[in-house]
Length: 187
Image (cartoon, rainbow, N blue to C red; front, side):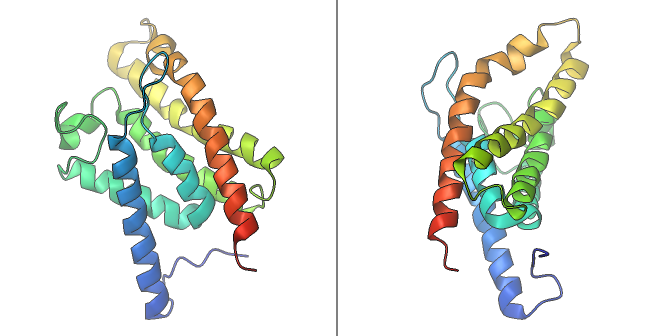
């Protein structure tokens, strides 16, 4: 069944989609500002929020929420982690985290695709879906980091290894939330 994003639909559906997209971008902003003490580095809740958005909104709406979030950041709103302290706007996005921000779109849409295919009906399927969707953040992130800083540098040590444990915890939590929401959704 195709996802109804509200495009070409009744005005009520358009308003619903707009509210969900704006709410999703706000969730991403809030999740960027929450820093949880963790080993070896503190973590934000952004990738967990991406997964939950994808699992609950579907690929199109989650993708629109991420695009709105990125557009807000590009326009100079302090929506990203570490902003405004570490800069804002396109200058921030062109820095070391730029590729990871691009990966947010792939992550949310991939989580939405998994949900649309029924992967959030059980924890046994939702956990691998969450892990794969979260990994989608790191592919463009590490490539960007390498292109920016040099592939001869310890790119994996800087952009992947410190985040594996926290990422696994967030993927498990997002999968559990998705399954719980699926089970309690009206049929």
